[in-house]
Image (cartoon, rainbow, N blue to C red; front, top):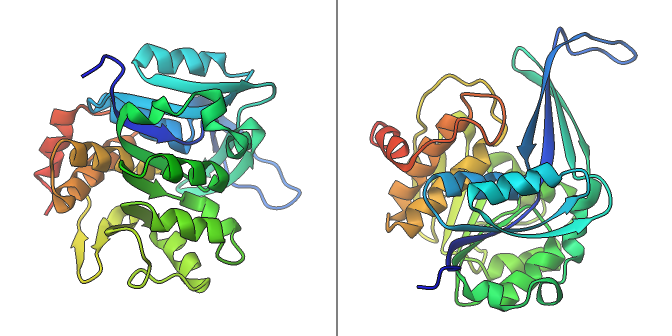
Length: 301
């Protein structure tokens, strides 16, 4: 095995997250005092890469980053993540969450991260990058980028979680259908699935993935294949902040698969991983070790 060999190569976004706890969520044309605010590193792709790295995988991340986030680049490098980042003049994507007693208002500034869909992988990084990885993870709906990925790595295990990007679909994109046909595992939450079903998506009739994972927050997950459906419970813990739970699940689930676990146990490990992240503010905080995840996995019924 060469020194630059990767267990997992992640394609996805980076972002800066701002969390504000407020006295109340104001009505239109009203204001509210901020009790405290915090800045965290985030982004669907980077969150997954960081958690998988904490669980012991050798991880690479392909993304774009703004000129305002060189500290983020240094942080990822210091963690030991192999980064394939294209720097773009401008602001990195920013997510702003205003929270009060479990209720939330969110705002998103797209920033340069949307340029991911303009990334030419062969030109920027070369196609040898695919040969270094055993598995591929794609986050959100950067369809032009993801078309390149599935074309260039047909012999790799591919996991796809389109995330909240599906809510931008008013009808089913042909590119999305093509990408789904060429991945091994598709992960959606229950709300994303409902939206796709309103556009004609059907788990039982969709060609491509051998397995579908539908996450249901505190209620756990459902595993679907062409002929079966199995429910998997969640690990019960105190919820502080649910942001990043899905990304942590993906990291734990993929890590388990690469360590040789079957789908059912891998989903339990994904749920156990997510349970740590929701116990503190931020998507890349309270990162567990592999052994701690296994302890909680064994407590899930």
